[in-house]
Image (cartoon, rainbow, N blue to C red; front, side, top):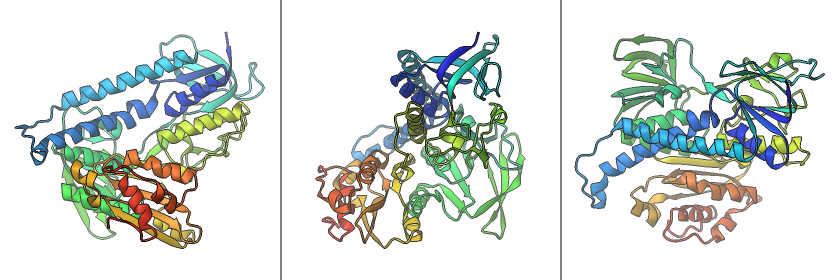
Length: 474
């Protein structure tokens, strides 16, 4: 027998389950269809497990360098199986938390693959959901008034770089490694590639990063990219930019080799024990019945309007499957906006320029708003303040004094256009800049905010003062 719902969500990842919770808060009878585990990529194959590994790498490096702080620890070793065990415990705890939230919100969860059906006896419009249950039982039929597609994404690869899960990996397989390789080639110097390069290097792995663009993390401000390159190179990571990877790999039982055309000239060869392919993500939009609707796609991603409606106005889409900023916190807020629109709450359009982005490497990087290059292209007359962490007492106490805070402002209006940071704990500090953007603050207002001493946040206040040449400690 078919069950009726106000809303059915395809996908129980961060975007999907947050949307479900908001829908339950608004009194909508809601179901989530998830073929894997609630929490999706972020919880099980992305944000959380990778950050757990990064934290273990950070602790290892702290122990290795402990004598600098007057603490003698003796021989320090990595037990990678215990590292993985801790990672799994963190994931399991959060997974149980998501399951509890579904029960608390009285949200029905179907464990299986959901497909959108065309017009049928159940509904004159496409949108009825057929669920192929994981347990092999008879398909469930769900009749929703509205649908949200939140099916996420998966790692891309490149022609000729077949993922075998042993020598050639994506981040999915790398997270399951039972032991650390001696060496790793990372194809792709974007956010995920840099986080893995940092982590593996901190664990003692020899890392080479091949990046097609002329600089690493090319979507970040040029100064951040340059500083990240300098600091990771100083730590021992090898970088080759302008590297066009050729579509052939040579594998042995213990290594993988690849060639790349570097800066349009010579072809160079690279060999390592394993290779990680990190070249972006593709939307999961196959096999969910989109062909039974009028939903449009662009470059493999679902097209939506500002409130995440597809061409079928009762079917919405959010998160990685629509492209844009493929970040968990973005998917969550897209889901909330979509649900509130469904419920007639008249939500504001999501302003992507107000969303903070983070790189959880060592050093960390974080940003919100326009880069200097983007601001110049948009025709702004700029004034810029920059302040180094080496002039901040807490950074010296902490033992991490590299990096800086950079604030870009409009000379005419004094509005903050962008804030960029690289250094210790900046992924925790960027929210102050995000709030400043939301409130349309000026550098003067941030400078007038009294930042506690000693704290890393003093760098933000000093950078704000530096915009007008008023920094105290420079």
